[in-house]
Length: 381
Image (cartoon, helix red, strand yellow):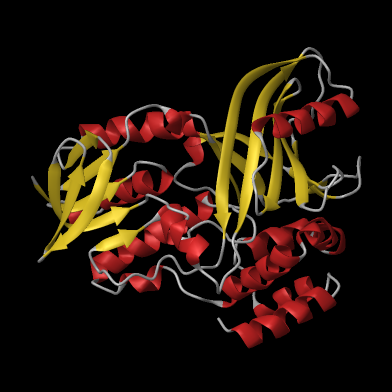
């Protein structure tokens, strides 16, 4: 079977790309193949982001927070982030909305299978799965493999790894308007470790133990830390409604740069996750828009993502955390202590101008960054 476009993986990036292609009249005559692995693992996840305006996915947002706290001091005051709100979209809501629409489209052939390999054959790409083979003029591939990152000697590679529990307590224990963005008051143990708490009701919350480090922990180690954290705050009786677990690559390796114009990486496979924080969803929305625009205009798809100054800022931070992983708590805490959270969120969203960025840099002690800059100049980019 032959198609104009093929998308491998119907996660957030593949789904948003497919939906955007089908929504534009430029692609009204195009055929689209979507290949996704069987199963329902896609439901056990959440995506969070901040926004200061309405957006096309507003109807999928399950909760919004108006105040956040990030720092290393327990029981500190939360701060308003207006005009921003911190927002959550649940994977089950996202996919229950998009999947039926994609499957019902006459332009879409939906296939549940596992892709074994891709090969370029003239003007087409051959897609070999366990069950059959397909052909497409262009393939967008969201499959991620750590191999490229692991082989790189030029860019440090860390992971944002976590286990989260959605819990329901017997008594009111949370403020559903306040998101605990990064609580670095937990023992750091030589790493960058924090607790992430998102209350959705006075008796319900996502409580997530997260690390920015090189190695994952045993599953039990995450659970032990969450249990100790809750117990320290007097929360001893609770029901676990759902769990989530994940690991997001933290690297500035330019995964989006490939030799092929027909096999295009997307999502984590293209480095769409923010290297310094792991935030992915909002960046995916932006990059899908750029990708569709480039396809319409016939431009090089290398314009979707580039090595810009924000990429460089992320690289310097990763260089620091690679060598001195314990400094993460003090770096992030000082940012939120010294500057307004709105400015930090704007910076993390890569929407600040250079003078604002200088102000943010001045919030931290300069020596680790100067050392990282010096070493990076010697090493190259």
